[in-house]
Image 1 (cartoon, rainbow, N blue to C red):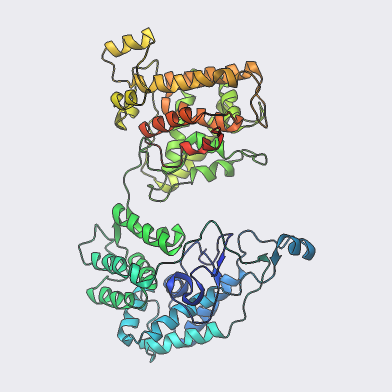
Image 2 (tube, rainbow, N blue to C red; image 1 turned 30 degrees about the vertical axis):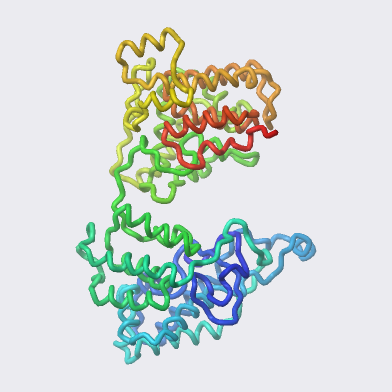
Length: 536
């Protein structure tokens, strides 16, 4: 949906006279609206690209009105229409959530181009390219400027949309000022000029060509309006079916993030040359796989297919589509092939997810997760063939860890995390096994240090774990670490700690961070338990 916005907004934080993204109409003080797709003139161009070409100017104006009407019919996330008037007043809600809406953003883009005194041919080129030649005003006796003025008239004639919503207020989720035009113009122009290089690939039947004239016109737009030029560039790349490499995709997201745009504005419709799916790759910022699914289990969580589906679709920004499903499936297949009993699997899941024992778990639950993941993978990566990971009879098979470059035992030793004293593990070292024994030892040491707490029944939890079940959970975790996958075992261990609110010392938490670094975890993965660190 191109019009729907996120459930937060900002007023008076750098948007004011400049409007969303750095351009705007003087005197306005709109609160910040974050769309989950394209918007403004680039969003209108997308609508023209997707619709049948209008046969005359009246039909083209009708398509503009239809686009604005479609936005007005959308419901904002977090609506409070179900609340009574008194409840809204008490909670700080009103009924004028959207005085500054899609029509105003579109009008802002149009007025920016008209006020910039750009050549008419420049405006015509960027519009035609972004709209995939869906409407060329010159073919109907209109200049590009006349076309924009007619769009502005339609926007100006619309009444503000008034719907129940929260009164605009500063938000901690987006409290930075949009960058000034001077600060980002160079970066936007650099991305436009990069298009002059030979693309990584493009579909032969592209409906429009990314000609040098179009790129020059985009550069002209970037002088007065770099944010608008950036959106028009993205729309043009999508229209021309230009394939973008991963590095450039990441730069686009960095620019979009600076403007406060949703990731969908970049990703929807953009052809990216993604790396092949690999469940061993660690390129997400947060938790992932089965442990992430456990972290999403809440009191109102029913464990339905759609709950699993949400995690299977939770690819992080910059990840190959299908990555979340691939790593979740990998975790599940490992456990399904393990020697853990159904009772042990159920105990482990319920402890990690903070669910009452017996609600979900066991192999039937894991098979349902696997089925949902396979459906998602058939959609996102039809060519991907998951490889059933082998069950590890001991510590002699750690190829996935080795592929991640996790055999630097010296790094762990420097942090006090290596050096096994277990004779069996020392024998494995001497046998020349490629297993990262020091990593397994490090995880096992952390498990065993907190085992007395987890099995005492004294930890805080919505679903307290009796001593016998705590022992079962710890035994299952040790089995996962030593016979299935130490990475999966450590992730589930962190979830158990969070679910049971086990207090941590600063030193212990730093050891967890060191293990997370060895495993390639993202910036905010281990920090899911930082609130457990005792202070004072």
